[in-house]
Amino acid sequence: QVQLVESGGGLVQAGGSLRLSCAASGRTETIYRMAWFRQAPGKEREFVSSCGRTGGTIYAASVKGRFTISRDNAKNTVYLQMDSVRPEDTAVYYCATNRMGREFDSWGQGTQVTVSS
Image (cartoon, helix red, strand yellow):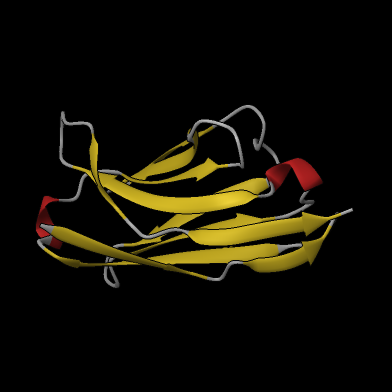
């Protein structure tokens, strides 16, 4: 089992920046990819970005060029640097991990990000 705890959410003005963190504990040796998803009110949860153990980042088109994912394997932590944020980035952001060849099956409790216009 992997436990995930997100932090860093809050209120930010449009055009500003925010940095989210997610610390993993438990069976961290089983983690393959670490990812961020988000869910806005009334919408389904959507993929934001993921990072493999040795790099290899993937971004949703809506955040590419504005968000940067990074990972510190020594600390079992993944970060999401959010720049040039927009009101449509408002959502609860969730951290998730998977095992090689598996779906994302470990989830954090989420952290709220609100972007004011």
